[in-house]
Amino acid sequence: MSYKIVVLAKQVPDTRNVGKDAMTPEGTVNRAALPAIFNPEDLNALEQALRLKEQNPGSTVSILTMGPPRATEVIREGLYRGVDNGYLLTDRAFAGADTLATSYALSMAIRKIGGCDIIMSGRQAIDGDTAQVGPQVAEKLGVNQVTYTEEILSLKDGKITVKRHIDGGVETVEAPLPVLLTVNSTADPCRPRNAKLLMKYKRAMAPMEMPQDGTLAYADQYKKKPFLNVTQWSVADVDGELQQCGLAGSPTKVKAVQNIVFKAKESKSFTATDGDVEGLIQELLANHTIG
Amino acid sequence: MNNVFVYCEIEKTTVEEVSLELLTKGRKLADQLGVKLEAICIGTGIQGKVEKQVLPYGVDKLHIFDGEGLFPYTSKPHTSILVNLFKQEKPQICLMGATVIGRDLGPRVSSCMKSGLTADCTALKIGEYDDNKSGKHYDQLLYQIRPAFGGNIVATIVNPDHRPQMATVRSGVMKAEIKDPNYKGEVIIQDVAKFVPEVDFVVKVLDRHVEKAKNNLKGASIIISGGYGVGSRDDFNLLYEFAQEIHAEVGGSRAAVDAGFCDCDLQIGQTGVTVRPKVYIACGISGAIQHVAGMKESGIVISINTDPDAPINQLADYVIVGSVQEVLPKLIKYYKKNSK
Image (cartoon, rainbow over all chains, first blue to last red; front, side, top):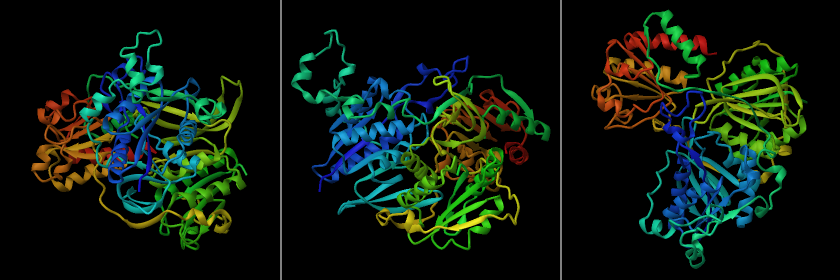
């Protein structure tokens, strides 16, 4: 049996590598100090997808991402590891999307792809930590969902059996296809890039990444090797309604943002007296260090 | 109509603590808004068992959905219940735990209702909002306050135009308080079949058991780490106790592992795991270079040590000079006192 698998992946700022220089003295995020990376749990999802492809000959894995043109990097990273093709959803109208508008756009793209048997994504992205887009995509497509996946135990007869994390334990569930799985960081890590695939796809690009002034290097290659052209879709390409995309399609609005400044400070010394300890706790709570 | 709803998470017939915390918060929000508090309990064999657990928190109306296949939780039946009930009752606010269940159910419901959902809120308040774009003014919206961007910012989110305003809150963030042990609330036994189509019961839970979770040191935003100065395996439990309060993971230094205070998979340092939490609390760790190699990228470092000149203190933003056995119980005590 062969399956059509779509992996949802996101390019995120590396919020885990927040060092003392990650915030500017003014208290804003220093983006230059935070490299854009493949969302870590999406890599766990990618590994699970690639394994299913290997176990079920004839299956295909596509990678779908939404973001600015540079997010194509995520698609290339997928191609280097064995996915068959990638789709970049990019359009100014997608900008400012909350989870609901994001899941709308992704679900429309999956419809455009022609549907699939299994959708996989990371449990959550490290920049927002909401864990909402996966289940919302599943709802929009009307497919089953299994969140917090740790291991895929079997896939046969149109059913997938999955070991998933629950609060304080684990659970084994069986879900009929089509299904969306979100994968935890505790699942097996993703394989490294494959050298041959890296050589094959290193010049793969989405149209918007290509310079339009005729300075594109190896321009003839993109005609000879169609696989170097990453599919790029706008709102109109996926038959999306503008009202449901981006800021317009987002019910949640950000009212205020307070930065938490991390910088090297003089170290403050406290004694073990009750008064000192309580003072410290109050300070840590007030500046959102804990709690 | 227009009331505050809380989805109660139920393990067999016991309502989870996080739901009681949310009922307490929901009661306060409902009082502020001048509306009623309603609770939803979904499970198998819960009728007659959940009422006494839920009503004392000031619940005016309790909706009970009791039927086969509703426990253990699966996404679709619980989603259908909430969506169909909300279409009927039109709540203005819905709260649920930021647990595995709440984070599976909340987004699915919000997608279907096309309403906004804010995950993992650390505070909820009522306030006004002016939309700069449309020039509209809104009274009495729910402020959903949460950390974002890997904990580097705290954002206040509102849902001006869509109902219900949905939020999930982690367990332990709010405080559960009984309003009145004899609080009189209405109990409504709902007909499950009217809310859940038979086709929703497709995902089967084959096996379910509680197992010790793998530690999550790499992904933790707060780590409490113990060294030789903790003194004993028993005293290491103090670290776990504080960790539970502030949602931290527990780690250890090589010296603590070698002394048998903690298991070797908790070791942080050159030969253990490398961590980059937002906050690192070093308890009785001197700060050998091998240990520092595994944690020097941490955001804020708090050191508890009897030696004011311990090398780790040079890295620390906050130093408490004292023994772990003396300081940790005080930290726990004053955290509990000041945090809620």
